[in-house]
Structures are given as structure tokens and as C-alpha cells.
Length: 277
Image (cartoon, rainbow, N blue to C red; front, side):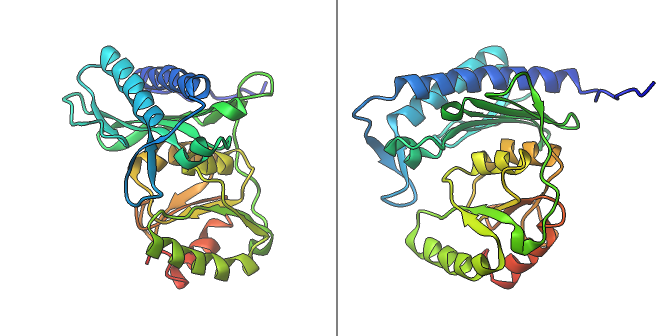
């Protein structure tokens, strides 16, 4: 009889995943159910339109408190300021609310993203998308999985590669005016060569949509580690290729995730168009 091999994952990685899932679920519920009707901007970051709300801060505090209670020796890197090296070799990379502007406006495309790194490599990741009722997760070497409106837990696989001119590709725009202007120029050159471009407003959601076969590819300049750590692992575990400029890993300069067959031609065009500049 045919036997399906179940991936053997490190018990530590499984523990990290379970903690991340609980923290993301709780933070997602706080953000979904606790959003005040008069939600206001609490601060700005890179520019006046790059905002943080009181809910971003509350969600990060919930996540870091829960994790520190379970694993007091771990380090943190969080978008809203959580920082510390820890002594265990494990670091948590946290975006408590990816898609803050969507959240501020009441749009549904936002997520909680939590990844655990061991010795610098991402080993577990969770992306919770409360307004979709979906949760995505992966452990290194164990595949990518999701729960949602469907029954049970679904194994994720990226789409079979179409020709580039039939590829649906997502991107995002920076909040610094000069950067977004340049990004718009790149997108204008790219869009005639693709099926179409989408712009959802959350890197974590876009990466999960590549993993789930809802997009053929995604690229963006200007991402931080907390934007992409969990989603990058989920996309790779679903069979997508991820990277940055040729030969490089995803970075602040450029992040690309795409189904094999779309990745290389997309990367080549982005390099030709100077998408990292």
C-alpha cells in the first residue's frame, strides 16, 4: 500500500508554532473585536501617512507578554518597538498588525504575523487574517497549512506556473513619497507584461495568497523583517520560490515570492527595471 510520509518536525519548532498560533489568535481577536469606533492615529513612522494606532501597540503588548510568559529567555524583534536578544537562540519576529492603514479605514485586508527564528533561520510562522476567518501556518520542512471557511486544515500549494503574460502579481507601495513614485513607475512598466497587478495593502496576506494559489507572484521594495518573516516561510513551504535581487534573500531592497516558472522571469524584469532603487 502507498504510504504518505509525514514530515518529522523538531519538537521545539512544534512548541514555537503552538505558542505563535495562540498569540496570533488572541491578538487577532483583540484587533477584530476591540477596534474602537473612533480609532485614531497614535503616531507616525517613516512619513505622515505611515501610521500606527493604539491597537497596534496593544496587540504587540499582548503577543510579547504571552510569549515571554512561556519562554522568558527568547529574544524579540517587533514592529512597534519590542526588542531584545534573549539567551536561548530563539527570536520572535512580530508584526502585530500588518496592514494598519487598511485597519484604520475598516478594510478587511490586515493580519497578525508572528515568526520564530532559531539561530537566525525562520523555523515557524503564523499569519492570522481575522476578517477572512483564515489562519496560515508553517514549520520548516513540514509544509504550509491553513484553516478557514473550508472544513479542516488544508495543505497549501502554490499555483502551476502560467506564462508571465497570464500571471496575476501583487505588489505594495511605500509610504515615503519619492519611493512610492519610483514604485509606480516600475509597476507601470510591468503591468502590460502581466495578466494584472493587485495591491492589497498587507505583505503578510500577499505572501499567504501566493502560498494558497490565489496569486502567481508578489514583489515589494521596502519591507522589514517583521513584514515578511512568517509569510516568506509559509510561501516557501507551499512550494513557492522567494528571494530578492538575483542570488539574494528577501530584503528591504526587494522581496519576491512566486510560483516556480514565474519567479525567474519576474525577478529578471524587476532587476532590469531597477525595482530596488
